[in-house]
Length: 396
Ligand code: SAH
Ligand code: SF4
Image (cartoon, rainbow, N blue to C red; front, side, top):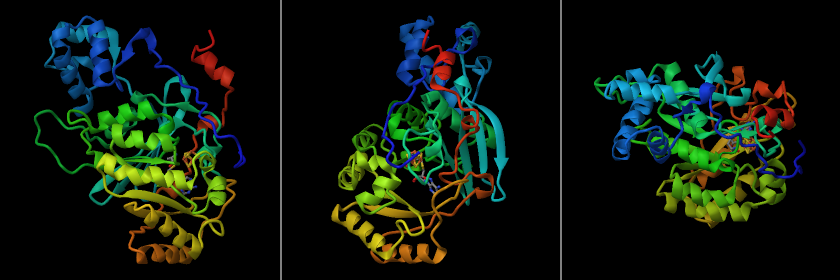
């Protein structure tokens, strides 16, 4: 799509589809929502809070998927749950493992759509890169996902379900009663897969609340990073309602270039974006903001760009680290990666100015799992919006 295509948040949000037999999925409900559905199903109001706590722990702390294993619940209560509810997560369609150990999963969600999830193992930790939408309504010109037209928001269950799926695959659910193992294969989450998380705010927030819940997945909010292209009004909400770390897809130092690379810049320009970023660390009580900067040969990689970038950050007093991302190519991409020497020179200017400037190591390139290379096979069998709506029963 051309860079000047309209910026749209026109996303088809498919309502939570009741699975076969009309059973409701418990995965992804907030505690309040779970309480409501349990009461509706016949749980006594006085007991509802305790039941939510018990079921919640089974699902998110122990990774249990069948009600019969929930041994601290009465047998007839378990039978009632099994009759009315399911515990379902996205289904793994395929898994590829890179030479460097990176795993790329293709998972299928309701309606037959597919999204990609990437697991990146590192020394002493491991990061899961999850998706928030099928495709993306934005059209950043260097991003493969941005060329995918089919878009829908993922539900909170589908978002947290990606984390649960990875824990299944890594075989990392603890056993009740066993000593707590502090080293985790899946220790960090980044919302850097497919989609713009701040265009699916409520579902992303609800899913991340589960990820951070002390009786849930139990990740600290400092181990969750949300990356946005710059949806300015939602940045303050992210600080207040999620409080995770923030990464910003900055990528250019003047509005004309950023308009082309990250077209949402036409809606909220660099100055407005910097204003929103400046208040983020205080409101969210977090540390530095990560500035992501994709290195594109001859487009945004001069010494002047590096100096302008520093001026922007300094003039707004933003605690920052600058993550330089060597451009990952994809078939038909209109850009080339800057040379290693250029990237190093750029990094050096930033470092000399007093900011950390790590160059992101490209992982999983052999399986097209690197940043910006994700684009699901859904695209190949692209359906019309009408067809999707018909399948979801929206036009009946
Ligand atoms: N939509 C969100 C999150 C997903 S993209 C966002 O744009 O921030 C995660 C990161 O990968 C972003 O910084 C994005 O700009 C970057 N990226 C996209 N395509 C890329 C490519 N081909 N090479 C390197 N980085 C890319
Ligand atoms: Fe969407 Fe992010 Fe890709 Fe831009 S970089 S098209 S916002 S996924």
